[in-house]
Length: 277
Image 1 (cartoon, rainbow, N blue to C red):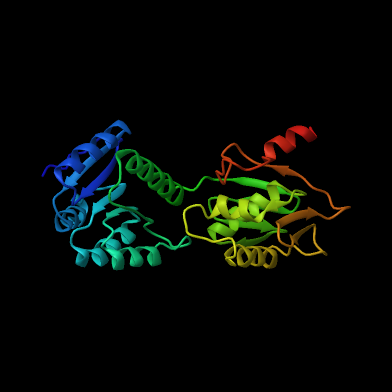
Image 2 (cartoon, rainbow, N blue to C red):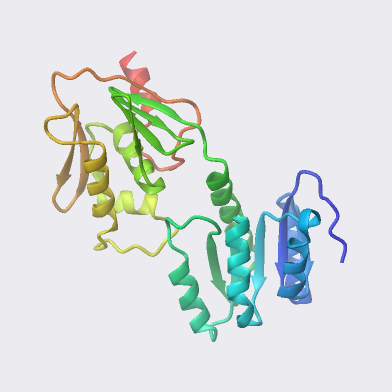
């Protein structure tokens, strides 16, 4: 097959699709501005991406997996290439789907994995592809954010908070949550809203302790206790509130990149700054 360059289009490798899927999904991808590149088998795809400096570059692997034995090799290669995977499987591939759920950890570096169970319509394919490409773009090219709150400076490109001259490195999810809390100082952020905003791509139940562990790490790493400029307060049964300690000066500025991109964030720092001006 011919894998010519497609200009600035995002190339989507399509593996194992039948003729109808290749035509319908390929048309959807083309309308999105993507360049679909079909492969008959996993082996053909792997040969295309491992041809040394001549190897093809792709932005997403869309695979209808017929040979489950190829899955470990595909995931290893995509992880090394930081290439997201959208797997389309049938309901009988239960062991494979269980493995996918186990591997798709929110904090994992490398390839993100999403899946759908047949039958799946063209519109859902488009939505899943758009989301996978957006997530991977954020992972590979994180927005450079400089946000200042008193003595706390957030550096988005490095996932670092500089506090009194000291670099404090946070995990990606911790960084997003900390910035969200600082942007909404003095406002209670409900537990369900935080889980839905920051863990929207994973199966996290309300009773899960993942949010509490993340908050505990932020409180410890950033020293958000009663003797500091800011205190992270837990409201039992509801959520969390970052409070500014009275008597401490506070200042805040954020650039236009608006990191993290949570469309339902209740109050943006830019609006607060304008209100105080």
